[in-house]
Image (tube, rainbow, N blue to C red; front, side, top):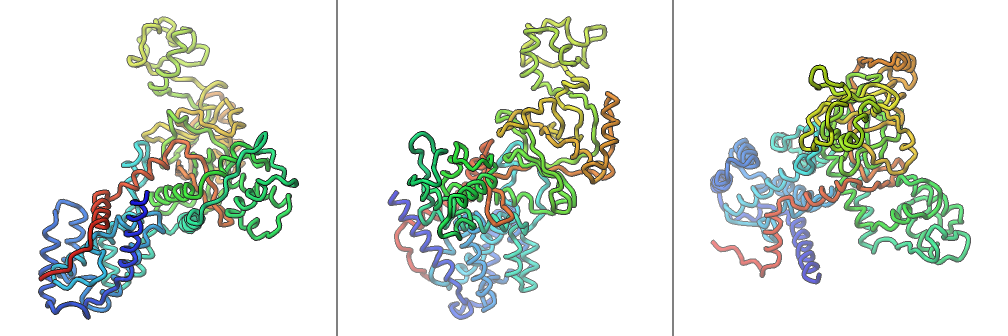
Amino acid sequence: MANNRFTKTLLLSSLLIFIAGNFSYAAEHDGSSAPDSTSALHNVVLAKDPSVPSVAQLVSLYEDRDFRPIWSGDGEGARMAGEVRAMLAHADRQGLRPEDYISPVLLTDKAPKQARRVAEYDVALTEGLLRYAHDVRSGLPPHDVYKDVLLPSVDFDAEPALKHALRARAIHTFLVSLPPQRAEYRALVAALATYRTIAAKGGWPTIKVAGKAASEINLEGDDPRVKALIKRLALEDPVLGANPQPMPEDIQDAIIRFQTRNGIEPDGRIGGDTLAALNVPASVRADEIKANLERWRWMAYAFEHRYVAVNVPDQSLDMMVDGQSVLHSKVIIGKKATPTPITRMVAQTVIANPPWTIPSDIAARMILPHLKQSPDYLASRNMVLVDRPEGSDPQGADINWRNVKKADFNYQLVQSPGPDNALGALMLDSPNEFGVYLHDTPKKKLFDEPDREASNGCIRVQGIYPLASWALSNDAMGASEQLDAAIDTGQTQTITLDEPLPIYVLYWTAIPQDDGTVGFRPDLYGRDRKLLAAMSNRKEHDRRQLSAMLTTAEPKPETN
């Protein structure tokens, strides 16, 4: 532990030197000529492996400048270098790690003098900036982190953007434009600083279970936990924090605000879920914000003027029109074994009385066991075999299901429309490679449960009727008669949308609120943990090299 603290101290000291090292190479250069610098840069850049995409960017960038240094040689270069160095050193403000962008050659308190060292410095700063630009704008490739993700790619190439900024002498504009410009992202950046500050000051007090249960804290009595509760709540609640002498009703209101913000039943009591959320350390909340910042980088493009947004951890859906939610609904999401993916899909039609074509893996896992017990199971559930041999029973009554193994189940089952159909009465048809859809359900009591992980990956929508109406008519009731008439036929009816409706199925565990606070949701599928691990492995080789350098003896002075 002591060694870790020592290493962190060395790293911090080096970063402070790095920030302060805004050198004017025009003043401190040892007299090497411009041709020497150009030749050295040419040699340093072209010595790199050209098959690496980032090297190709470097070559293009320096060729565009006839291999003249970017960050040295005159006062303007030194000024720009100082601004870039400061940005890289503060990459942690964006939830990134400065050591992923600062190579050992940049960690020095003396300006390099030899032409080759100047070239190495120039290239190292450019490489760090290009890596940072890519990471802060578009993040890790989503599919490198999760297998079940498919989102539009973020179209950003840092090299031509940097070229343009250098030609226009607009490096500051380039740097500040790199992070996603969404309000949600900016709010989480501010929140990250807040939670890190809280953690650095020791965090917040733990609300302990005393006596019978934590829910029995008497806000009007002399329970010693009330003082700790006030302090804990005030650190996230500016209303309570501004009240020097809160009354019991003020504390009660703060508890309800905390519960509402964090997706907990707002009963004003410190029950199990509320206690657990209160006692999550501030440092953990900061990490959750980091993970969500990374996922927002995957969304660094404009949403459409109307779209559906599903937040899986919140188990909810919003119909968005011109940036405002016009419909909020509970949803049922996939179980941990069959998680709902992260994806974008587009609904082209609404289907009334949809048949359910049952995926073979679901049929083998969930239906075959019932068939082994009762050969009449398909008939009882209004299911048929669509690929049966000619003349055989459509409900498979003439098949010996006991002899069929899961691995050999190759039957295509379809559940016909009806009151027990798993898709219910309505479905938004949005073809996608995961086979997940937004649809109705006959099991509506599940919407009363606080935890609604019950599907095989599809999204069951409590407000499917107004959602379908919005999809068809841009109004919650505008298509109600059309939908009712289609459902009343009892037959499958396909209604084409006048305007395709994008659907985003996303995963937010840290949610900015309108009042500047942040609400948190449980990491149901462990996605935060997996993403944070992947983020910590960025440029792992360079990180180890940097750590090794920081723990070695004093560096030797330059020699000719």
